[in-house]
Length: 252
Image (cartoon, rainbow, N blue to C red):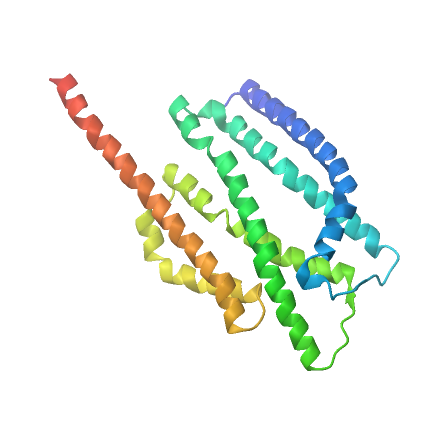
């Protein structure tokens, strides 16, 4: 049990770290708002959306999209610092060896998130827009899209996939903590496959090729997570076996 002084010390440290992250977020928000027009024009200039006209159906639609874009840029820029402060906050409870083995989680998580955003924005979302646009044309519909609905669809595709790309880092982190084991992951593999197939069908166009294009990367991420988890467990067992003879010699 922690004493009252220790609780106060921990809460004070947490408060300081939250202040630093909040200040950086506010600065990043200013940068995001400044870059928002260029970012929105870049998105509008993508090949898959050049034929689509964005429309606003209320005076506030454009402003809300502008603010939302700046907010998301700020989150993206603040994420590495926030991950670092999370690690730094728990650092006093770790040994030097544990700290050295967990600091990798910060850059790895951010790298995988960037890869997920890139895949979902340049592959999954254009595929979805192309399919839905063709479906609309087959029924003779005139494509008139509200900018708010368009970006809501894009965010609903991009960010779930970006978060899903964190899977290998999270699994490895939980394996290091001893919470999960690769044998457990292999045992529930078929259930995970089913769940990932459902998720893939929910965030992709309703055709078989699109389902596969989204679901297969998710399944590959899960398999990579198993491989990474098994690699760490095997490495840990080898290290323990190498230490046993030394321990036996010292005992004699």
